[in-house]
Length: 279
Image (cartoon, rainbow, N blue to C red; front, side):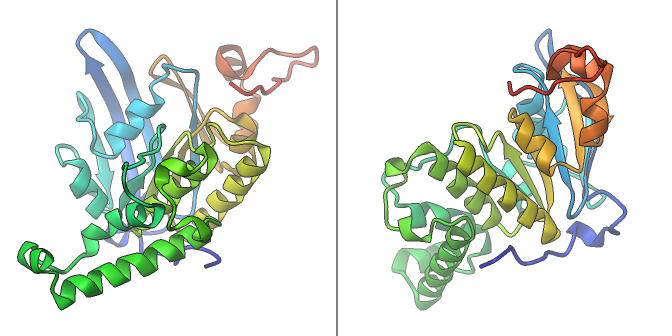
C-alpha cells in the first residue's frame, strides 16, 4: 500500500483544533520533577517533534499522553475527552498508538504474528469462540493476517513476515514497531526515538514514511535525537530541557532561538546562528 488510509479525527474534531491537547502537564516521582508545566498539541496531518537532551522528560511526556503514566497535575484530552486516569488500552481504543525506545520483540512470535496483536482491539470473537476456534475467530485471524501484510508492505518489510522478530536487525525491528502502531488504525501516533540505531539510508526511509503517515491525516508526535530527521519533517518543534518547555515553533525558528542553541542544539557560530548537531 502506498500510504495509510485517511482517518476521521477523534470525536469529529475540526481540522483547526488539535486532536490531542495537553495543558500544564506535571509529573513528579517522589521529590524529582520529571515534567513541569508542559503544553503539547497534536493536529491531524501535522508532525510535531519533541527534542531535548537525555533526561529532558520527552519519554515521560509520551507515557503521559498514552496513558502509561498518570500526571501529577495537568490535563490531556483527545477529541475533547479527558484521558487522565484511563489505562493505555483504553487510550489506544480512543485512537492513540505509540512505539517504544526499545522495540517489543515478543519472543517466540514471527514478525507477522506480532503484527496481528494490535488487531485484538478489532476482534469480534468472544473468549469462548477463541477457545473453540470458531468460524468467526478464523475470520478475525484471516483479517488480522491480511492487515499485518498490508502494513508490513507499507514499511517495505512484507518479505519478512514469516521471520522471528528476534532475527531482524534493529533498523527493521523499529520499522515493524511503526507498522504495528499503524495497524491500530490510529488518529494519533506517538513515535519514541524511532531512528535510534538506524543508518543513514534507513533514516531517510523513515523520514518519508513519517511524511506519508501525516499526509494521510494522522497526527504525529515525534520524539527524536536525530536533528537532521527532525528538521526535515517537523511542522512544529517543542524543546524540553530538564522537564521544562523552553521553546515551541517551526524547525527554523527553534534552530535559531538563542536559548535553544545554548541549551541543546550546539554552539553559536561567528555569525550568531546556531549550528545544529546530532545528540
